[in-house]
Amino acid sequence: MSDQVRAIGDTEFETEVLQSGTPTLVDFWAPWCGPCKAIAPVVEELAQEYAGKVAFKKINIDENPSTPVQYHVKGIPTLILFKDGKVIDQLVGSAPKERLKALIGKVA
Image (cartoon, rainbow, N blue to C red; front, side, top):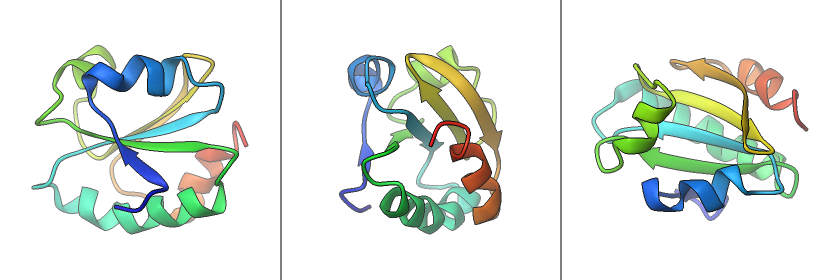
């Protein structure tokens, strides 16, 4: 994981995401999830491309169960885009880079 995609937990979610002045893409994942591993390099690339415009965070759902429940995360990977403390959109499952760019394009 690069410096561009920061791992956070349930306790940091409110300050790091909901109170952030920067739009934030949160990747809900788990170490045992194959599609999560497949999409991780794409998320890293996008974090570098959108540095300074969009923040990128990761939450391990096994270690942090509260936030995924709160946002009804049923499958992983789930990427949820937040702006001003609100969910803008979300994507469930692995997706090509262009689809992720379209999601991020809603705020950047």
